[in-house]
Length: 132
Image (tube, rainbow, N blue to C red; front, side, top):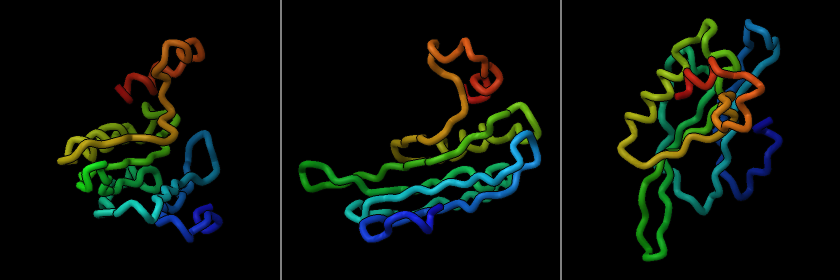
């Protein structure tokens, strides 16, 4: 899908989808687009096999109203729907990416974890525990 996004005003970062061997038989992947007005300092190399096709981590320089800038890490992810399954290390590896950031950070995307009390009566306790 990343190739279908408008590229004129955005830098596109993609993690190509990979085939899953569990309940969902289709591919997943993630695309993060950053407005070209925002400077990208670096894309973080993610090499753990559990994370293949799931997160993108980039450091961006955000401008302030005083003409300064600060670096902020953005992690976009498509989390596992079943973190207690075969890929138990997913949240451990995401945690390491967060802990290794010397900057403030944002984790966004499809987290697949039920956090809010309003969502909990639908289940998802295992995913919530791994996320926390």
